[in-house]
Every structure is written in structure tokens, then in C-alpha cells.
Amino acid sequence: MVVGAGLAGLSAARSLESSGHSVVVLEARERVGGRTFNGTTADGTVVELGGQWVGPTQDRVLALADELDLERFPTYNGGENLVFYRGGTARYRGAIPKLPAPVLADVGQAQFRLDRMARRVPLDAPWQAKRAGDWDAQTVETWLRRNMRTSGGRGMLRLGVRAVFAAEPADLSLLHFLFYSHSGGLLDRLFNVKDGAQEERIVGGSQLLALRLAERLAGPVVLSAATRRITQDDDGVVVAADGHELRARHVVVAVPPLLAGHIDYEPGLPPWRDQLTQRMPMGSVTKCMAVYDEPFWRGDGLTGQVTDDVGPVQLTFDNSPPSGSPGILLAFLEGTHARELSHVTPDQRREAVTGCLARFFGPRAGTPLDYVELQWAAERWSGGCYGATLAPGTLSQFGPALRHPCGRIHWAGTESATVWAGYMDGAIRSGERVAAELHRLL
Ligand SMILES: Cc1cc2nc3c(=O)[nH]c(=O)nc-3n(C[C@H](O)[C@H](O)[C@H](O)COP(=O)(O)OP(=O)(O)OC[C@H]3O[C@@H](n4cnc5c(N)ncnc54)[C@H](O)[C@@H]3O)c2cc1C
Image (cartoon, rainbow, N blue to C red; front, side, top):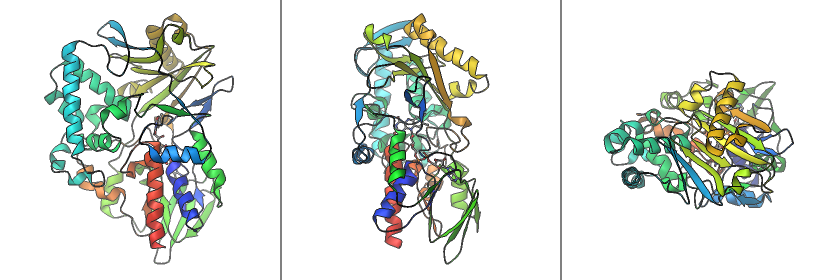
């Protein structure tokens, strides 16, 4: 039995079936895909409101896309990017924004040091890093304040942290940040489009990965069946979900740890697991798409990528479909900006977002034909996104509980991955890892 039909749960089910086991998947939502979700614009164009990009070294998601006959296309990256900094604007090519030399030097030096520290964090046991206790006793914000010289440089790295975690540097344990960065291949790989995590997209939208995986399973995927209670004894588990009570030998729980902690377990879970899930809050992101008849910024020689030091939108991308029609700008509200704008009406939020787009790309950007957004913190079965953000003291003291089974209950989900943790690739790897763990047992 698998709880959760995201990429982790579906990959686990697929791997288990291919080793000859029979599996039922229970899913709370009325759809599969979890944190991947294909929305649509008024004219029917697919817009990915959840996870979307894939990139080099994400071998498992790339292989899965190939196996499921899904094509990929490059993220639009032709032309120049824009950086808005201290009231000025500059155009630049490539990954390094045009900023004052002392700011760039400060960011470069900090990134070099963070990468060097990240390499020292063992991916399968971050808590065993030599300085784990020290790094897990501080936040990323504390480190930035102590180790960077310019406020501009700190501002840029704060923006980078929001972009990767949808959280504030003050929310995050430095050890978790270093683990995450190492797990994805260090900071440049996480930040960049070319040769980075934002390099490519999936034609038709990333939710197709989950939809096709589910279609190809032999066993049932039961939708609208939130698991409420898991009881285990010497013979097996009984899973009570909305409208269903099912018995199995083992259960894989493949949901974000925070939500795994909302399930009622009988007998109760060991304290180390329960306290882990109490300490894994989800990030805050609202993903917004503004739709135009064409990607007019391309005609001005722009990629559609903006970095802004004020916000509330601090990052944008050209998210048009491969045909280039319609033109779509993707605007992120992340961390504090997503939180502040969760208190206003959808119209006020739209106005704040399109106001930023007009500031970046001119008045035409301020009046899109259509606008679609998803506020992930309001999604009951995600609790926020992109993933769990660990506060100090969590990974070093509770980390082993991420993957350690509790009797017949086994844990999957991108948060439990060692490689590309937090990403679609990590979710798939975690599903395959838990299936191998179970296969050995069974
Ligand atoms: C806005 C956004 C942008 C992102 N961008 C990227 C990106 O560009 N590239 C990338 O690789 N990743 C990205 N991610 C992250 C990526 O989407 C996730 O890492 C991945 O999809 C997680 O998969 P999962 O299976 O571990 O978890 P989930 O997708 O969360 O799956 C868990 C499933 O369990 C279900 N569930 C929860 N509780 C219960 C319950 N009690 N009973 C039954 N079912 C339950 C949920 O409904 C869900 O379907 C992004 C995510 C978001 C939201």
C-alpha cells in the first residue's frame, strides 16, 4: 500500500510492481501529481503551477520522462536578462547580474565558501558532517550577516535562498541549506538556467509524469481518499482512508513529512519520528502566470528573466509553451512576499504582481489577457511548497528519522532523498529507494 500519489508514491508503486508486488495507491486529492500540477489558461494552454523544470544530473526524472515518451524543450534563454538594483536597471547576458564590483566580489566569495562547506556534508548522513552541530546551531541569515561585507551582496543571496527554498534565510538551518545545495550539485547548479536546475521543461507540462505513471500501474490509484489513520500489528497494517479501510503487509507513506505527522498512528510513532515531523514546516510560494498574445519581450532582446532587489516579485521567467504562443511570464512570490500577499484579496495580489511586471517590462506587461496563480500554502494536501524547510537543530538531532522505517511503515517523498532532495528528481529517487527497501524485506 502506498499513501500519496505524487511522484514519490507513484514511483514507489511502479518499482514495487515491477518486482512482482501488488500495490494500492491512496491519494487525498481528486488528482495525481501532488506538487506538480498542470493548470490551464482561459484559452486552454497548459501552465505548470507546481514543479516544472528539469536539468543536468537529474538522471531519474530525465530517464522517467524518456520512458514515458515525454519530450523536453529548453527554457527560453535567448537575449539579455534584467537586474533591478537600488533604483537602477541593467541588462546582462549569462548567469552573473551586472552589479557593483564590491557586491559581486562579496557574493562570489560567499558562494565559494558555502560551496566548500556544502561539499563536506555527507549526503546520506548530513548529521555526520564534522561541523554538523555548529552549522545546525545557526540560520543561513546569521551566516550571511557574519560573513558578508556588503548589504547588496546579502540582499542578492537572500533572493537566491528565496528562489531555491521559498523561505527566508532566517527560517533555515545552515546545515540544511548546505545539505540541500550539495544534494543538487552546489549553488550554481541550483540557481542557473543553462547547465542548471532550470534548464529544460516537459512538453505538455510536468504533471504528465504523474498522470502517465498512474495510467501504467496495474493496481488501483484511489483518489479523494485521504489517509486518516494507520494501525499496525505483527501481521500487517490497516489503513483507514476516507471511504476505505484496507489491509496490507506494509505501507509506504509518500507525503510531505509535515502532513505525514497529521496522520493518526496506532501504536503511536517513536518520539524521534514524531518530533521530526513537528519540525518540518513547508515553504511559502505563490506561482503566478501572466498571459499575453505574444512574448513581446523577446522582440526587445530580453529573455524574460528578471532579478529585482525590492519585490514583491523578485524573479521572473519566460514560461511560454514551446510554440511561443501565447506569451507567458512566470512571476514568483516567495518567502516573506508570499506570506505578506496571502492576507490580501486575489485581485489585490494580481495587481501587486502585474504592477511589478509593468515596472520590469513596460506598460504592456501590466495588462495581461489572462492571469493564473496558485497559492501553495493554501493547498491543504501540500501545506506549502516547494518543500520542507528545516529550522536549526532538526537535521543534526532528528535527521536519521527521515528514512528510518517505523515497523511496517516506510517513508518516501522528496524530503527523504539524498540526491536532488526537494526536487521532482529527488521524489522519484525516494520512491525507488523505498521500493528497494521493501523488496528486500518481502
Ligand atoms: C510552485 C512549485 C515549484 C516547483 N518547482 C520545481 C521545479 O521547477 N523543479 C523540480 O524538480 N521541483 C520543483 N518543485 C518541487 C517538486 O514539485 C516536488 O519536489 C515534488 O513534486 C514532490 O513530490 P513528492 O511525491 O515527494 O510529494 P508530493 O508531490 O507532495 O506528493 C504527495 C502526495 O500525497 C498526497 N497526500 C498528502 N497527504 C495525504 C494523506 N493523508 N492521504 C493521502 N494522500 C495524501 C498529496 O495530495 C500529494 O498528491 C516545485 C514545487 C512547487 C509547488
